[in-house]
Length: 395
Ligand SMILES: *Cc1c(COP(=O)(O)O)cnc(C)c1O
Image (tube, rainbow, N blue to C red; front, top):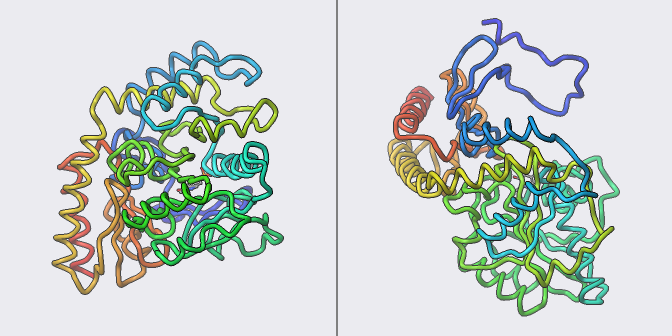
């Protein structure tokens, strides 16, 4: 198995613990490694390839765009970017969009945005942003300062100031949101990296109410939950709330790098020409990918498929938990962002699954994270469940 001997090249900085596989090709729910071995990809490139690998409709639009124009600066009108913004606005409660290239950058924009809104629109000095325990908001200096996980922050002091961390899903924390210096709240509705932890609906409702009452911007990080991952285009739709701001990235470009900040009109007054920018942000190629992604979701009713698949897979995982209740402590998540809380280290399960040609992820020490493409089907889900069953049987 020469694959097992794959080692990191000395030329790359060692910022990742990589599995000893090199992926050469992907189509729909499957990827092939450089040896031609096929894997069921239930990671979707970490919630990126929500339509599966190389979806035909997106590929076609991107190819057309490749033949026209790859890049031009944001100093000119970019029709594809304008159309994508219009489509995002049409399908959400937001009025305006800013494009960047990644999740961390979208949160970076949100952090700048919240401060600017406070100082310019509300003429206040409040600058503090409240975030929550176990959150993950990205790796730039401001985004990691917003992240309430020590392991992400160690060694990077001094961090960006102006963040305060409160316990997630905790009603008493809501009483501490506003303290005179606070201007915004930033949270995930299902914490992804932090362990696939959904926010409780009544907690989120009370949080949103308090933000409104206290004049705090409610900002939702939908970088992992967005673009159908939880069964609706955005997770906030399932919480009966309208945030002031959301951030998107991962699934938006089906694999091409694009991030976005969406805001309601009142909040969007924060930014004017010169406030923020990005060379590549929303360039014609990635915008074409984003546009084709949204169109495909609508054309093939993929949100319905995602809901049905999510329901089915969760039911099967719950049956698995009943069967192996000494190994699987709980099943949680929404739509196709699912987690198994395991007694053994989650990485043991992930490694065994890889040996059986199935790719899944961890989310912290004891959570197996399962992120199938929204377009997966019963056959693939049954294949996955039977592999998991084999693994737990021999544990
Ligand atoms: C992945 C992720 C980010 C960071 O996105 P990058 O594109 O890696 O910068 C931020 N927030 C959440 C919730 C994420 O899942």
